[in-house]
Length: 310
Image (cartoon, rainbow, N blue to C red; front, side):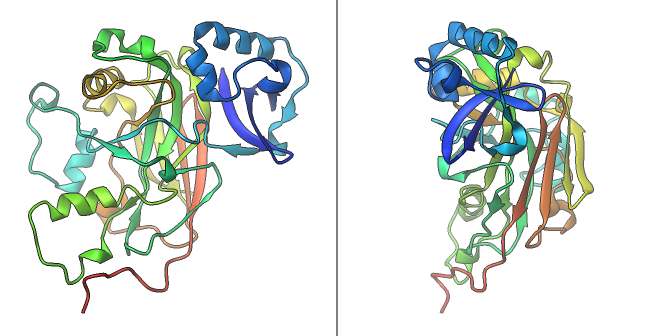
């Protein structure tokens, strides 16, 4: 089942995507959940009824007649994962070499992003005025379906509602470093700031429920920039699997319905080749069983933020 959040006739809503159409859930079930997150919080019975509405074949809205939004426009928590593909670690040469078996001797590196980083399918991603180099990262995103704390990797699958696509757009330089006195951890915080900008995490086009993705560790994913393939890999190359990531994060915080985890990116990013994004570039992410997500980068700022410059 594909759950989409959208605007139709200036009215935000959500529904089930069928063949070329969307069954509007609030219209078909007036007393039911009012959003995708509400539906996840309502549990399996609610999702089962939504699936029945789609199977009933009621009148739908043509997909081309709606404006798709991010499936979870305001996730309760939005996590990214730093360096979860060994090939990406190698191309970036950050933090020294990985151990021979990083899964046994290292741990995941999650970080939080604000919900203002979420962008809709088709949206123009603003170029922030604190970075001159903007990059792209195609990622499988996991959506949590039930509250979980200290869950084991074996039980993690039962906590996952489904999957969507994320583009972890990244600012690779920080203009506010110009003229700044050096301090320990500057490089880390500059990297982290580069993940927080408005619109830097486009997501979509919809949430595909977990039953339609039998093995999240066997999904081809790619990124095309203006039609040129820049990233091409498979989720089997993750260092830490989806289940292991959910388990690890549930030890740090209580995971709740609607939380999103962007699970890391493979090699091929612009930082490795020096081929950063230019204004107007189209970024198209594709992941098996989910679909495609396209966004463009907005205009380059005329001036950049340099608070410490003379």
